[in-house]
Image 1 (cartoon, rainbow, N blue to C red):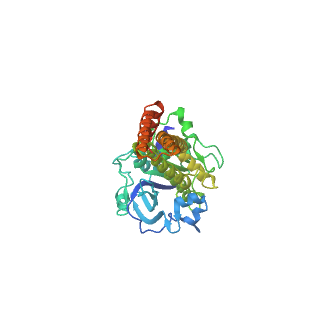
Image 2: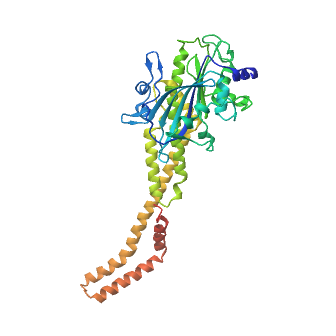
Image 3: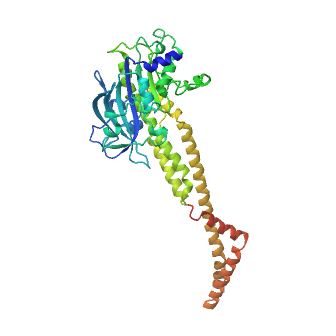
Length: 426
């Protein structure tokens, strides 16, 4: 197995595509064509209209926007440097409540040199290496100058390092990735190759323990006998399992899908992850303000907006895109985290309701304590038909004294404590 892994480090597949996704801060709407990058294959053009047929309407709106309110733009390019060919780039507005300028930049490459070293460089495993792809003419800061600011690498690794989506169709010499026959069994090394491409690592970077290898690879998506996919936290990979025959081969269509529909499924997962991260931050700050009820109401509204706009676990009738989205969600524990958010928000909502009930009860108690003695005194004067101002003042004084006496009792202290406990908290 060691030999096959070393071989992968030096392998250049028959067809290699690389999509790089990185977070940016959108400075202005670019003067680019609207929509996703419309790759073409024969008569097929993967524009927003075509891609929308693969997705549920809510998912399509999140990925492509609506007429008059675009959220995605693209720019064709043709830049070649050091074995990489930049075909174009996209910007997807990914606004959140706290970060309205947040966006995702997408760079589309064709790779004409060994793919794994490029991926390792993207992961920061080879600092200052000649394999680093996002330098020189491919530097995102230069490509997006005046349009977007690239996130600093000092940010947490999970969001600072670019996310990579790699596609490799092997040659006939790449036996460790190939099936034995059209529908034969895959060698164990095929999934190891897939793991290396998705994790952007070699055994020297991250030795996969044999005891947990099956668990790590259980989420491999078998799209067909021809190819498989694996989604991890920092990257995804698609690997062919038969030799690519060149022009007209199915892998042309596979490569197109990996950087269009399947890319969009992963982008939707990234949008969900960013919103879940923000909702988690909001939960942690609920008690940092004295206005608990307002905080909880805002939180519940943000959860409702996220749920109706972005939270989808079934986005298409085409199974592979769903499987990729679910794999991304599982890698980031999004279903479990969102369930925890809902449960915690419900707890806070019950707390607010309890405080409001206490406040109402306290207010009614105050009305009782203040109003009963005064009402009794005025009622007596009215019954005896006494209109004397002096007697009225005496009655009011006695009622005040009675109220003060009641407030010294356990009931009175409970009423005042209830009001003080909720004062300023809602």
